[in-house]
Amino acid sequence: MNQPAAQASHATRPAGDANYTRGAALPALLASRILILDGAMGTMIQRYKLDEAAYRGKGNGERFKDFPRDVKGNNELLSITQPQIISEIHEQYLAAGADIIETNTFGATTVAQADYGMEDLVVEMNLESAKLARAACDKYSTPDKPRFVAGAIGPTPKTASISPDVNDPGARNVTFEELRRAYYEQAKALMDGGCDLFLVETIFDTLNAKAALFALDQLFEDTGENLPIMISGTVTDASGRILSGQTVEAFWNSLRHAKPLTFGLNCALGAALMRPYIAELAKLCDTYVSCYPNAGLPNPMSDTGFDETPADTSGLLKEFASAGLVNVAGGCCGTTPEHIAAIAKALAEVKPRRWPGQYRDAA
Image (cartoon, rainbow, N blue to C red; front, side, top):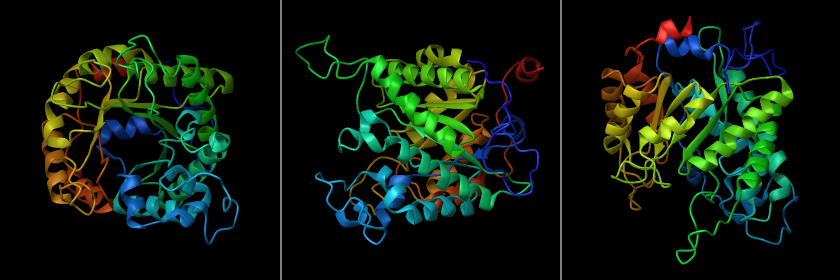
């Protein structure tokens, strides 16, 4: 999948930019400074202490009042039932300095929504989520600081590479084709809602990611519009491997054919334990590197579920940046607008990572 400049878009134009095309400004911005990604959506939603009735849309209509299954915890549904909350969260991250915000669609595929019996809502979830993020970005964009919507494409709760049954290594609970169809449906709705780029994230199984990338390739061919792609995996433990067994080098080599705009890691280990793997990717990748870790390791006694303060996380990411390792930095689980504000401030004057042949390759 080549990533040429994006074609003219039907997405809403950022304020003051008459020449806007989706994602077209990102490569130049990445070459000039470190871009800031937003922080955790789930952590912020938890602050609202929503109950079952709120998830069903209490105060915003009675559409899901009699839905036969519990829906509390289905954060993607909130883009339909509590859109003002999702908009508030997006705007808090934008006010904190985020250049890129993710849509509230991490689990908005038919594969993931099957857990709630809400597969038929997937198109609406993605479309409404993208519209909310688009509106927030348009509100905060200026000619000097454009903001971008990343269509968030999560890994789903199923793995195409690993058996769910220890007694049957050949068993699978999802197929490549099922994943491809689910990802295509999600991505099409995100594109229709006005996203600027796609973020295939928290990858624990490279085969799942390949299905997502294949779906995106088909979508670009069908629509004639190529959007930039960010790819981000998750190293699950100190072995330095993703769940399906690949080292970060193997992970990169398995997906580099997609020619992503950025490639990196998120979630899992937190910044301190993630550093050697980000350093390895920084040496390997002939594209921009992203890093958005959890706020340390989980701690159920903490208000956010994680221990690191904004000063902790921003200090670690500043060290990464000063060492020439990253081009995009942000936060994953446990991070908040306070974390993102601290990261944006800490990295404001740090030069972005460069790699050998960067400008030769771009010529």
